Image (cartoon, rainbow, N blue to C red):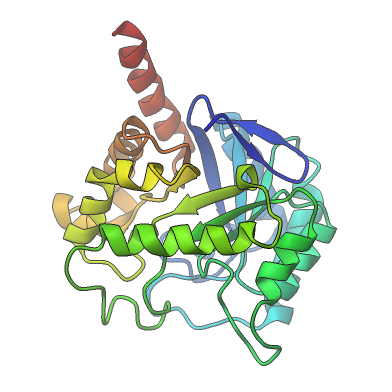
Length: 283
């Protein structure tokens, strides 16, 4: 999997890329409120780039367990002022949204990637298929399709049951194939197993241990372990104290073949990857 094609960049995936999280929200599970103004969000973008972020992922609506949906107008009001400046920073810009109207507005402003927890399935009063069409009608934008069981309000109340590796793999395969059937090139698509989105602790770690099964689909793979509650369960650490656990999980995901690592803690992740890559080069 050598490249990920996006709106403005063809990202070389020969080494894992670090996607820095920029939450423009008051209520995200870890850093809600810390970057909730345009000025603070842009300062955070620049800080993450200095720490080594290859990609920035802007999100204006929290999707933590139990989060309430945000209106499209409110999401755009938070997102667009930051996005207008972020697209000038010289790195690929991802927008974390599931609403077709937000996707279109972001792409119109020059966003490179649509990162969708609903894998383009979300439906409102306007009807089905609009998110698929929005991405498919763009000539080159990248897209990340994530697996989520249920929705943010219910996913951890009634998580999946049993062995989930094959169901997650099948869902991601079907989602990617549906998009390619609309003419989207395979190189534009990245897949995300959705760590923490409707899965138990054991199921999350099973996805990490069996990540090769997902890589067999032949798409770029994103891993999002940063600060997740499963890391807290196995370490006893609070969300504020999961830097080490997050960096270890990211390095393990990279060792198991993940191409993109979505993280809050860019500096720690970059350092962990440096150790991993030096070890791999010594074989």
